[in-house]
Length: 279
Picture 1 (tube, one colour):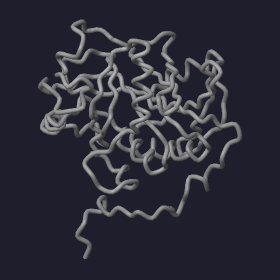
Picture 2 (cartoon, helix red, strand yellow; picture 1 turned 90 degrees about the vertical axis):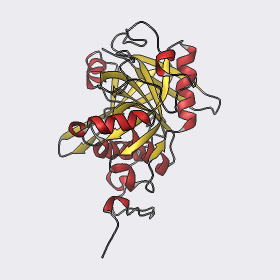
Picture 3 (cartoon, one colour; picture 1 turned 30 degrees about the horizontal axis):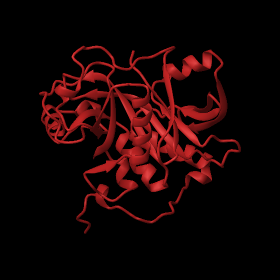
């Protein structure tokens, strides 16, 4: 009789019965860099302005999921919306990797677990608590998974160059938005999480499994009623959230024509286009 929970039965077999490359083929001219943009209204705005070129449509039971090209200076960047939740985001990321994209920044919003964090403040998760299911099919069971360090460094280089304030933190990834209970939120806050969302752990795990760099930026979208305090770790200065955050309660990063695209290179030579904002 099996004694392990199925979620803990990690199988290290590399090849799956269905591989992304069997569903989609490498696309000629596919950009090397990709932005995973959670806010559909930003993509719709760019489409309406004629600033995006359709590369291909991925398909599911819900219909078409367009993958666009967007020009940032002389660089072409892939842009797509990953849906909501880890399983579907995983499918689309795997397929975009199969198309030929190799370096990723994910940009979205997150609930925040500290009332001192202002709406719109920018947070960069360096690790994600794996309170979801998808990541366990890509990596062995563990409590957390790390973002790609060079990708995080690339985001930091760009933000510092533009004098945009931000925090490095852990994030809590969960599958069940309506089962985020007070005891769980308090526990996650105590172990250093400042944000809660539904995809980061899966995205980080897939990136590790596929061998591609990926990092994520999140803007504070909703404040959860959890006691404020000092994060256990993850702050880029070692100071408490209260001492690091600005005294004003207004966004430190905001939309300019509905989005900000930041372009930069880090010491490892990995170029990214990152977007972030609040509404």
